[in-house]
Image (cartoon, rainbow, N blue to C red; front, side, top):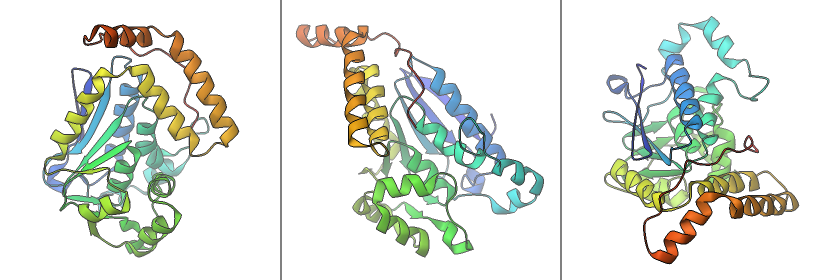
Amino acid sequence: MRYVSLSVENGIAQVRLNRPDKLNALTLDTLDELIRTARLLRKDRTLRAVVVAGEGDSFSSGLDIASTLRKPAAIVRAFLPNPFLGTNRFQEACWAWRRIPVPVIAAVHGHCYGGGIQIALAADFRFCTPDSQWSVLEGKWGIIPDMSGIRTLTEVVGPDVAKRLTMTAERFDGTEARRLGLATELADEPIKAATAFAESLLSRSPDALAAAKRLVDGALTGSARRTLGRERREQIRLLALPNTGILRRAVVKKTDPEFRPRARRMRPWH
């Protein structure tokens, strides 16, 4: 792939937006590569975590408007939703990362604007530098974030702050992003910090991590009754899985667990 790079070591995938000369501005080709990468990782049951970052000076400056507008027919096709997934290409480039059943961590530095912020919001966690620059930039151009950002931004910061950021297109730094709850943690070296966090999760059952992600994401949209039912079903399933026994024995013996690949399961609830 040309605009997205991927490497995997010790079960941790390192994904990079790779258009540094354009501050990792997003083209239709970049979106397609993001989708392909996410789907590839989703199928890998040995995968334990994903770190997403940008090469060069920025995470992503958002959509490359000039490049994209030169392809009006492609834009129309990209807007058409997939009837089975419920997303179009713009949305799937972000939402596909929500479907990966492992922790996804965005490591943000430099610019995180528009489509870039929507990619970061698709991650489960966001580590950023204090001086990183954030903006829901679409409002500057008289449009709205339409790459799943309305949903994910509202989930993370709440309706009032989501409306404010979307309406004003204000720019703010990483310290403010942390105060708003948009960023999970501040770090001078976010890739290093995100990778260290991913490594800390290697001692946890991959099946339990996948269940936790499904449950919390599902709890955001389901009723309390539905969430409680999901809790019961997930717990019963976990108690019967080999990795749970492997971890329990390792804890008793005070040894490092050697997990099997993550168990197969039904499609996610969202």
